[in-house]
Length: 528
Ligand code: MSP
Image 1 (cartoon, rainbow, N blue to C red):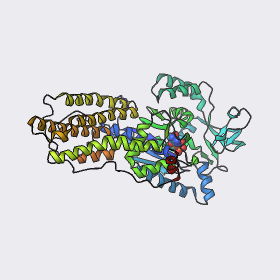
Image 2: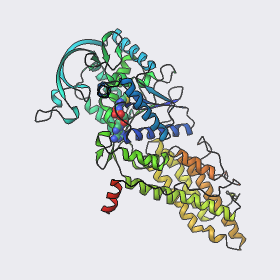
Image 3: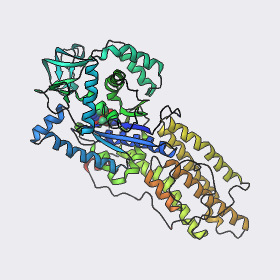
Image 4: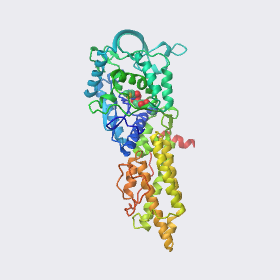
């Protein structure tokens, strides 16, 4: 999120488009949330945003699965699309567009670009003999074999295949790409991933096979210059980022958010070279997140454990899930999803720290201030506890924004929670419930100042937290009698905005959650 703005138009951000051959899982959910948080930060900072996500519908696996179920592939994709669209709603994702690669707007552009490359002599036909992995939908090489001569598990069945195919002159762009990466050190976040790409590029790369003969695969976009072939699914899928906005003029993208498994070669090699060959600008940045594991295993559907995490999202609500994944994961590193830890954060960070603070304010505001935040001359020479609290906020706000700008959202939240905890300590120190009983007018002033400080601290917290927990932020604002802030501008400084605002009678932001008993939870409880 650098402030450098080279192009007109909105901040254009994308997620990877999900494969239509399986149901949504934690990995998909996380990527949407992460991208949504970045998009919301940008909007609050005054940027117009265009946020794209979508579905990758073509390819052998989709065709095979549909065949096995005896339904047309399009029907299978429609069913999957419904699940993913529901996921977006369940997670409070603010995407502006949803692209499906079977849509005409996409297919037309893919064909247009293929024709352009073909006409420029950058696509040629050749006979190829090699080993083909159905699972990975790619040719594999001798060097990919394990020491014992067998193929690694991830390739599934590998069969020898000889066929004519079309190739994109990828290898021609290798020197240019190396140069580009060397001169654009911030192209890939985090930086160590860019080094991995350069490592990969130390070996010569082959031209890219961009077609599949229709005898093997029909579920794809037909090559415009040879109807006997469809387009290789990665060539088709990557183009989504461009096809979705080609007519809007939003290209290039500011950020593609993807997982580490699809960086090399698709996003870091194929895509930049394709764009360069087409004379199109490169995206400004690839933001590469790590993988979620569940107790050490990948959070994919085949591991059979991914549902639990999304069940928690349903049970506890989108914002709680969003908070958990953003608080736990250091973008770029892997993280382990733990239901235990999820519940601990719910009870402590959310319930005890944030929820309780709001509760206290509403409670005492009702008891001692007629349900309104006192207008307690916030600027007048504060006593040390108030001064310290304001100083802490003055340090917290810029740090929070800076960490978020560097995608360090987990530490940004930690910083914000230090402030929330300091407010709880401040409240205990001031003990307004005691001040309320005192007959001394100075204590009456202290009480009013204290309530005003808690309200203002909560207002600031809600504004800062809103990209991560938009619903909770809106609820806090509503409960302290304010309208939701749709911009950070003028909202993150200590102010008197809460003075006189009506406090709700009570609010329970994070109520106890009744969980249906499952084997897994009973098991953990017994083990303790
Ligand atoms: N269809 C391709 C992407 C094409 S983009 C032009 C694809 N789809 S996917 O459904 O397998 O993955 C979609 C995204 O989810 C990818 O960015 C992937 O890295 C991410 N994740 C899938 N499983 C994941 C975890 N267990 N953890 C975190 N993210 C992971 O790849």
